[in-house]
Image (cartoon, rainbow, N blue to C red; front, side):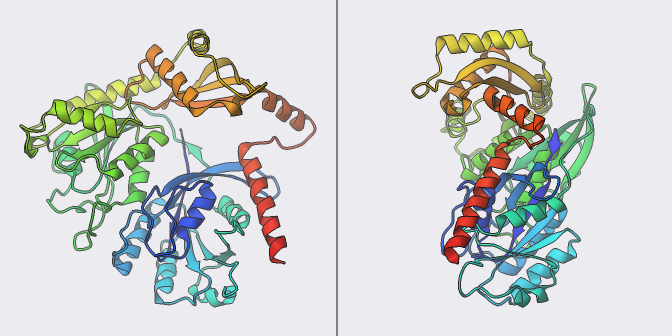
Length: 481
């Protein structure tokens, strides 16, 4: 599976980082407000781009707003240092966002200096360039960043130039060399028992374990063998080093966790039995599923559960499954690193999930399943524009990936796609892993073949989005003139 490059956004609050993130991802993922420090929602998105320069080409990268999981009361200097350290570790390109209506101060100089010190490519984005108070680029050159791009995230201006420059800097997505090692990452909020479980699974005191959250900084790794299977365990960083813990539950090293998720095959999402159903746990599960990784929901510290008599496993399990109903295929297990309860079962579970992810399906059986699903529940559509599903093939595994060919597929409702997935899971056991679907419209395929025959570039989704953005940008510039 191709590992996507990572681009990290850093900068002080209220410089427009979330607006920029939303524009690039092209959906309202983060909360944007006038007050500083209001980012509370998803901070990871996948960006598709179409290069406008000679040769063209399209690609994707992961975009991460590093400030999105920090509270508004954080100490700026400590917080930004940790952001940049994380960015230097995991990101391929760093975007430093500044407010172009304010003269750069000590905070901007510190951010730029530390970003440059990381030795990663750095782009300085002078945002809010559409405002009359916007300062010229010369005022920001003293920050030492050579690449300066003026943008207005609010008016979608300058983003095409930014994407072109990012495309020149990010490495091409590359497929990792396949091997027989099963990689398991321990994911979760601070102090959920990741390091204790890591030590128990590894059979030795590999990580530092303490009651304080944030004692694990880097990704700890250890290789073990279980029933003849080579396994690499990856323990993600808690959040911040001791002495710099922030308040609240949103203490989280998002870049390092993203790095661990991308490198793993199976993710164990740990949740403290005494602090269940936190929104951030749901967000993490969504990230893991979106990345196509296997997922196990692990309730940790079961030996010290408060009110165990009042809250038995049979009562807790349905509540957890309800809160994680968007990943109904993820198994749930209760563990204790102290007593060893169900710990070795995690290895068995991970190996079973890996086998399911690698299973091949018969094209004939798949198409019998598809035709049966369509017959039992015909596809709805608009007048004279009913989607038609003709055939299905499996194109990849780890995760299982299926392509459905047909016509008028843009009118296929998301609920019908879920219906198809349920039918697929009934036919094949994909417990513990997401399955991916792609839909190919035969008319569009034919039109692209004709364009290629004429020496033109095929029309892609990224190409269409890029053209739409350029059109909006041109209209905005015309209005300003």
